[in-house]
Image (cartoon, rainbow, N blue to C red):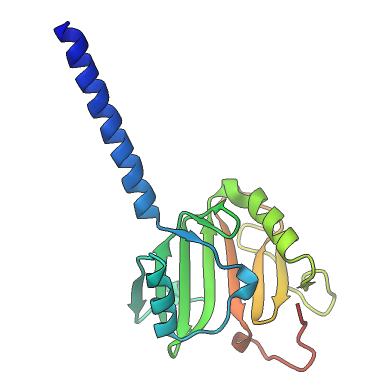
Length: 190
């Protein structure tokens, strides 16, 4: 009888520990990013902090960026762990890049296993957006792993990801605001 009671206590303690550990892990990963990527727009640093902290993001912000921490000439970034993005696609991180306190880029990082769900979401969500990578006027090349890039023009900027995941690495989706490019009157509308 004592052995059963002891076994039951150990089992309950183990379940409690693993349940708490799972809860803590999910909390550490942060909330879901529910905003659609084609709706991202130029915001101020204070607007980004206010909006996303109110939604439960634990933003960590840094200035004085080194060359390898920048996308272009950005001078400040805020990052936060996320559990998923868009339509419950498992994700790990969102990074907001700023120049002179204006949002310039947003980088989403997904595990390799999210490649297909992300591609499906983007194909469906952006089916009416202008896809630039197939246009002869634009050449976007390859990412460092040799994957072709897929690029869509949205109302407020460009969305870029890879068409394949040859090296089975983390998948990146990058939004870059219009202010990063020489926008002309023939900017593709989404």
